[in-house]
Length: 260
Image 1 (cartoon, rainbow, N blue to C red):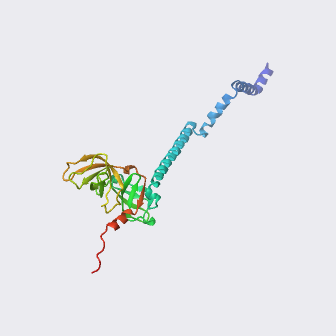
Image 2 (image 1 turned 45 degrees about the horizontal axis):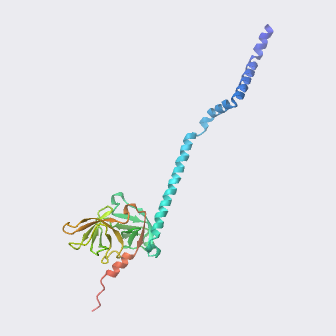
Image 3 (image 1 turned 90 degrees about the vertical axis):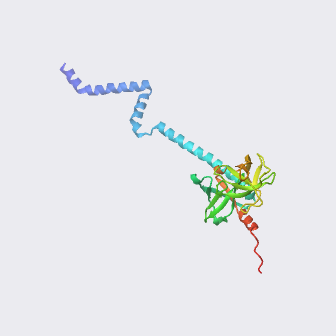
């Protein structure tokens, strides 16, 4: 009996570890290693990134790249449409991006990304697909300030295409501008097209302005038409700039008197 006691005291730890090992081996066999795999996952979790979070980051990055592609495609279409203008095809104008526009002057001014270095001068005409946008009022080497036709300070001569009735166009800080007629009883109706006048000293004749949307013929002191612009000035990203305004101004300037 004392022999068994001594043997148990000497070998019980080894026997216990052996039984534990056999139990673990049987468990692994029965679970096909799933227990160890789960144990490994739990033990290494602090050293791994959060898979769900990583998936969210990948999805967010993918969405960002997709939106960038969509935006680039839209910009490409806008530029392509601008370059299809006849004045651009004839190389009489310069395509330039809009690089600055203050929220409190959205309908008054814009800054474009080309200037004197490419030949833009004060008085140059600014257009976009659809018609007239404004004219250049200030120029630096690489930028130009544009006064929009929607600015309340803007004034230009215009004509009703159908009847040839003339007037002065003035902006009112929106996509609608006002035409004040010279005649007291103008021949005008809703839907008529309005273009720049041949008498304008700032712009060449025939540039598209917009369409008559409503009439105030009883307005005093002059009859008025509300004209919706044909160019979406509030959404522009690119414009074309030409020196037609300067040519027009020179052509309309009075000839110098001959020396006595």
